[in-house]
Length: 99
Image (tube, rainbow, N blue to C red; front, side, top):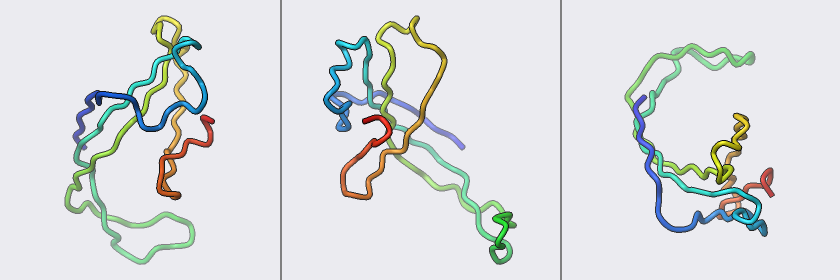
C-alpha cells in the first residue's frame, strides 16, 4: 500500500457538535488521504468461520478524509488515539461516538 496525507483548507464539514474546541484547548484539522490499497479475490467459497482463502489481485486507488481533533498544545497529548468511522448512511457525516 502507498498513501499520502495532506491538510485541507477551511473548516472540517463535521464540526465538533456544539463544542467550542478552541475554548477547550483543542484544535481540529481535516486531511485528505490518497493512496493505493491491496485488493484480494476469493480462491474458494466463503466459509462460516470467516477464514477465507484469497489471493492478491489488482491494486485499488482510494481517496478518503481524516478529521483529527487533538490538544492545541501538543505537549498535552496523552498518546491515546480514538478512531471513529464517520457514518454516511443518512447522506451526511455523523460521528455519534464523538457527540
